[in-house]
Image (cartoon, rainbow, N blue to C red):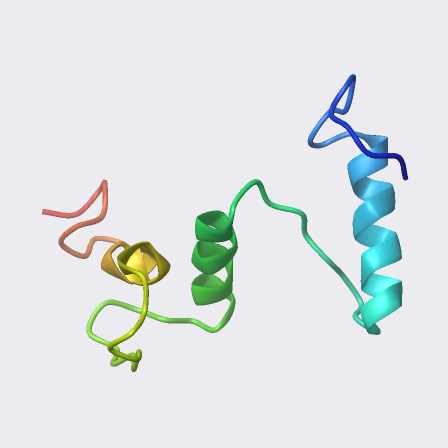
Amino acid sequence: MGGGREGVDPTGPKTRQFESEFAACVGAKHAIAVNSCTAAMHLALEAIGLRAGDEVGATLAVAPLAVAPLAVAPHPPGAPGRANGK
């Protein structure tokens, strides 16, 4: 795959090709390309099933934005803080 962003659809065939090749390279069944580290963190938290109230450890020397996704970790349906919650 070439560099640059000209004409690259973030959900198009080049992205799917990259995901497929990356998954093969790291020995995974699947890979999902995201647009930022924050999006990757959100996806990882969802993948491990992190929910509101779960404890998460982080070092004191971490950049604030690195743990920002924890503030909006997925909530169970109807939970406070979720769009359909109270």
